[in-house]
Image (cartoon, rainbow, N blue to C red):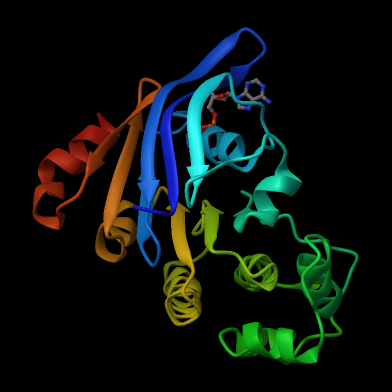
Length: 232
Ligand code: ATP
């Protein structure tokens, strides 16, 4: 099966070992969640997949091509990471952020490209000239995701999608990203503390604990056992 395949991923910081055997797959068109307690290593996992953090061991591939070591090569293969904290360029306008998302990986960024993405985030289309630093938290999250989609990913990885957002805003942001990815054939890997949102929207959820992952395939099996495995 093509898509993202991660086997036995090890990663850490200096002498600190964080990941000791992460296995996960995201197939084309799937929405997959990654959950775990604070500090379990969810962000570390995304950073290691996207090449922002060196991997110490593991076999990683996308559509059967080994994932390059560095972030630029990973993004060029179609795996795009929306980092925790959104990472929008606060001093640039909304439009400039969108252009940057495409240009950074050598993708076209003309008006048609921007409109393709803005169709799913109409509020952003009304504030193209506004500096990103002036947007609300929800608007910045939408911009970060829209900027990621400008890179024409085949897999979008979104870290802490709901962090700091009011529940109603989470519903809006999640709704937009799910429709955008579904309609554009982009697979989605979401890291989030909001387990209910993951359990409701994902085809499969991985729980990270003790440096390795457990996979929960079937929604019915994610009930009490699922919540307990994450929180206790
Ligand atoms: P949260 O849900 O709180 O964001 P997380 O599951 O995403 O947590 P990570 O951010 O991946 O967890 O962090 C995993 C561990 O690695 C934590 O103990 C954290 O303190 C540690 N860590 C993260 N970044 C660094 C770093 N640059 N240097 C050293 N340790 C780090």
